[in-house]
Structure formats: C-alpha cells, structure tokens
Length: 190
Image 1 (spheres, rainbow, N blue to C red):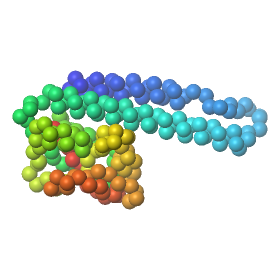
Image 2: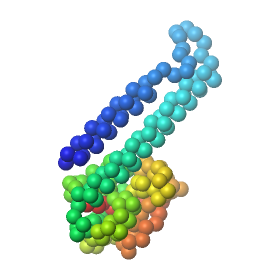
Image 3: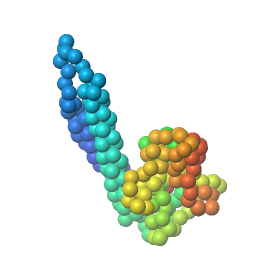
Image 4: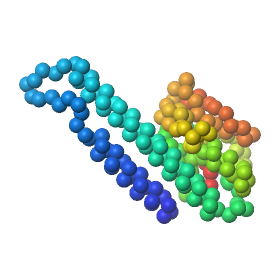
C-alpha cells in the first residue's frame, strides 16, 4: 500500500511539472486587431502538437521506469517459493488504457496488476507460475519491451484499430499478438 502511495505521488509530481512546461508561450503571439498569417498559426499548432507528443513520450518512459521498479520490488519482497499467480478479468479491446486494466485487476485482488510479458518471463526463471483454473488467455502488457523500447501495444493501449496489435497470452502459455479491435480478457498477476 505504501508503494502505491509513492507511485501516485511521483506520478502527480510528474504530471504537474509536465503541465507547467506545456503552458509556455508558443512562437507567435498574436495581438488584437493584427493580421494573423496562416503559416504562423500553423507553426503554433505544430509546436503544441510536438509538445503534446514529447509529454506523452516522457510519461511513457516514466511509466516504464516505475513499472520496472515496482516489478523488481514485488519480486524482491515475494517468497521464492510463492509462484506468480495469473488470472483474468473483464474483456476489453485495445483502447481501454493501462489504468483501467490495472483497476480491473485490483478490483479482484488489491495486490494484483496488469501483467507484463517480462514479469511472466522473470517468474518462469525464478519462482514459477500458477494459472487460474479455466485460464483462457488475454492481453499482456509489453513494458518493458524485449528491446527496451516503449510499448507499441495498441498505441500504448489507446487504439482499437484492426491494423494495430497488442501482446496476448494463450491458454497454453504461448504469447502472440492480437488486433486491437479484439475484446480479450486482461491478464493479471499477483
């Protein structure tokens, strides 16, 4: 519980600092009764779009760092004999977002979270895995990706396009990809 308060505090601090940076003036400031040029207006819009993209990238990096730290702390605090328990909750398409996926897991078990492929791989190597009876598979998070890059799963779990994909886990333990417009259960770990 204390760990979750620290994470929430860090996230709030990050959001406040990012929001402040986003409020800086844009390149062209228009005055009343002055002519506005389309290229100047477009430049301002592009600058704001670039700032929004930079903020999203920073948030994704911070989320990845915090997720990795939480996973490491949870792994360190768990008993070596305790297996990683994997279960599923509600089915969603790829646009539901990480927060809703985590909330769904925590609604069943307060110590659970949206499970990542890396967390499962670590558990296989260190303490083993126990699947919920009747486990049928579902969405897995990609943080961190095998190459260390930011997650591209359904555009960071914001897309339901059938041309985007996210990581999924089958009932047999095989991980693959599913299109983001597919409704799958959320795979949770504790």
